[in-house]
Length: 194
Image 1 (cartoon, rainbow, N blue to C red):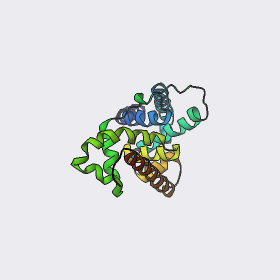
Image 2: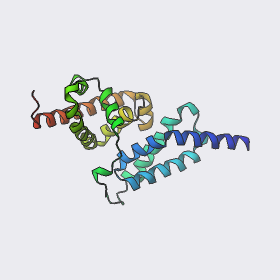
Image 3: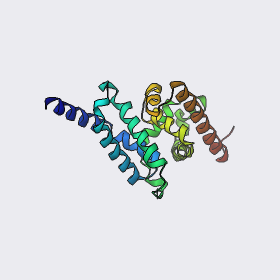
Image 4: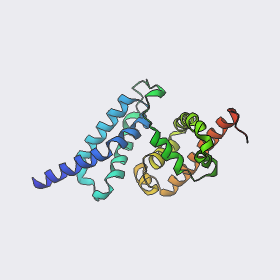
């Protein structure tokens, strides 16, 4: 009985700690708030039922993200029974996520965001960055979201997605390249000098 109470307390604490991140990733995967809520609820149920399979409690975060991703694969992507009613405005992004994503970019192209003279451009391109992320092919979008927005390590993202860390690095590199190209094209279309 005491072990069950310990499990319950541990699970509740961890789920509360990661609920916002789980919902954020679910929203980016399903692109619909109702489906995202369902996916997170299903994830919580599956995680609770499988808690005994968690060998290292310090690895709860990648473990529960893996359950979320697997749930999405099995329930939402394969079954297109729910119509997509998402409007872009529904997606839950906040300025701190955008700032974190931009700060984490090592490439010289994105370093111009740190220039104070570009503050107005930052605001305008924030929406374009979000749109560019949403337009990425799913394999790259999920990796960019997990690493740059949710802060998982390459190894944790590999564990979540069930692929090798090398595959994650490759997808991350390709995702960043696609983002840079989309944003560079937008900058050129907006009249920014080469």
